[in-house]
Length: 223
Image (cartoon, rainbow, N blue to C red):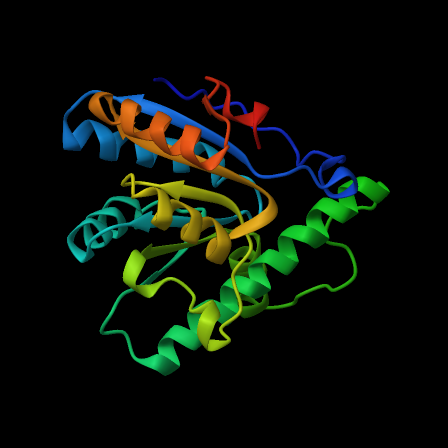
């Protein structure tokens, strides 16, 4: 499925109404490189939205590494990954930075709702400040394996991504766990599936009382 490049500003109504999470799928042909191309193009469109917090879930370290390699050159994404042998201190820093990114996203949305200006206030006189501001406006993305999702049972706080992308379709139980640990209350789930996985996706939909619709061609319609 093609994804168009149209991007609009964050919807002013999103925070007021607090709609429930919305679930979508995009189907690709049964070739791994086409699946990766679809993900990269999807991120290339969605991540141009300033400070958009995104989580991409994978089932294995190999797929995590492949995703990170494929998207590392996208200039408007700040990329981090969570995997099993990551140092605990590094993990904590990554999660904290992502939570800060979700706050920046909320501030941008709220500024749009109030009709406020963009980033007035501080004026930087040097390149360091300019680079810092540029980094803050990048979409912030974490790629994570299922083994390294936030541990709610151990008191680790969830992250509240606006967009959760299931690069690999999990079991129903893991699907729900990804939502509970990574998705904002009004977030969006996008499932990247090959043709044969649509039946599995529909089984998840029926057994979980979810509604998983085909993603519209113009991604701005759901963002």
